[in-house]
Amino acid sequence: MAVAAFFEAEDTPLTPSTNPNTDTKITILEEISEVLQTSSDADHRRKKHRSLLLALPAELRTAIYAAALLDNDNDISLLRTCKQIYMEASPTLYQRPVSFSSQATLTSWVERSQEADLKRVRTLSLRLTDIDMSSLFDNDLERTSPRPTAWRLYQRELEKLDRALRSLSGLRNLSIAPPEKIHSQLLKAMYLSFLAMIPTRLPVLSQLTIHDDESLMNKAPSLKLLSSHARLVFDTVKRPRHVGSSSSEASTDLDKMADDVVMVDGVAIKIESMDTD
Image: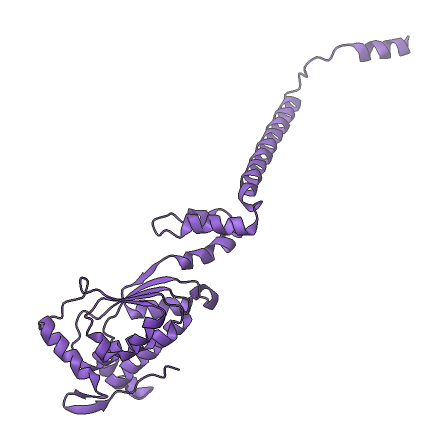
């Protein structure tokens, strides 16, 4: 009887529990299971979506990065997709055309960038500007170091530009705009000395565009060295107008730079050219 009663009890259909605590636990477990399943499905979809690109050969991924990033008008949100894509695609950004409103912004950018990335730069535009002369009037400077001379400040600026050109040895296209106001012989000397560096510092340059008059060839004869491998373009359309002088007067001022000695405030200063080996 007892055994028969046991089997009869086991065969009896189950009825819902009347214990509210049991119902609550079952509901919570069901919710947790549903959340875990949803999260797992989302992770699977992300992995599947990501693998569509990362499963391609490296050469094809590089071509895709170039097509997506080399145009300056294109969005760079691709770099935020995942860490691997960021590491692989970010060097491509250095192949986009870059433009600098002053040599100070250029040299600062060069100092912050990796050498390998700088060698990827192909197209660059630079507007030269006058330098900051405020240190000449800093009374506190003499307490820590000798006060620099105006010529030394320009020479330091030229040295920074020289280092920048050396770092950008892969440049193919370079555009240079002179300072808007060439009001000193030292600034003119820096400008012409910088132009003279370009042929030897940029061995693979294919085009140099200078927004100035073609008469510069007489003041920076080293530019003629470019004729063997690069195109030299003079574009006066974007040339800045020198305030306080006509174009002929500005040209006459630059003619004075043909000699190795310039007059600054009545003092003869010898122009020391940079080493161009």
